[in-house]
Image 1: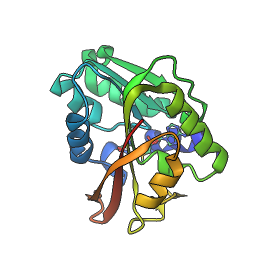
Image 2 (image 1 turned 90 degrees about the vertical axis):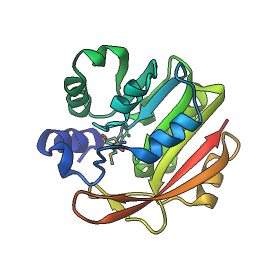
Image 3 (image 1 turned 180 degrees about the vertical axis):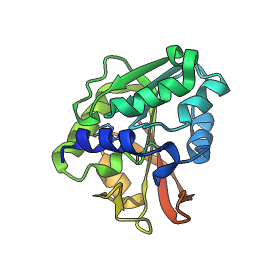
Image 4 (image 1 turned 30 degrees about the vertical axis):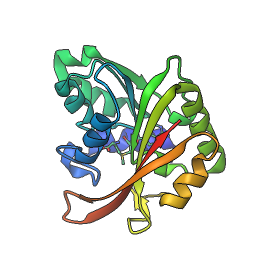
Length: 201
Ligand SMILES: C[S@@+](CC[C@H](N)C(=O)[O-])C[C@H]1O[C@@H](n2cnc3c(N)ncnc32)[C@H](O)[C@@H]1O
């Protein structure tokens, strides 16, 4: 199945709480973003799905938020949830590997989207998008399954990341500043171990 078709189907068929990545409050992401940005920074959430991150950032007073996902169904679900507040956000429906940023972001956030890219060309395209879209002193936060985490997400094989592989993947583009290891309790009473890499351009 094509990538887009897979995700459109997921967001058409499954409720918010019926997917393993559901988090009522994305605590690690919020904490890392708050510690590494100002309220007027341009922030993009890549592969955001219908995550509550955007709701929380609006609540905290962030004024320049963009949300990107391959699935139009996911985006329309969040827009509906936010109501009038959706007008405060820039919405982008795109495969990140085909994304050509037309503006610069101070902070690029990705939880559990980058780790689906196992093909060398896709990773290169992702890095090109980061390179074009990240401001001069921009920061990147990428949350991916660690090497103690699952091997699949949404039935698709993923790439696990640790300190060494985060460093080598983004060498020459980003410097790894910190890693936060965290357990995500899924709605199905299982635990997924994540590494969140904090990078600086
Ligand atoms: C596991 S979910 C995580 C969603 C959200 N980041 C969160 O933490 O709740 C992966 C998300 O990435 C999106 N996605 C997968 N591949 C993508 C791609 N190539 N480009 C853009 N979005 C993608 C999916 O539609 C889905 O919303």
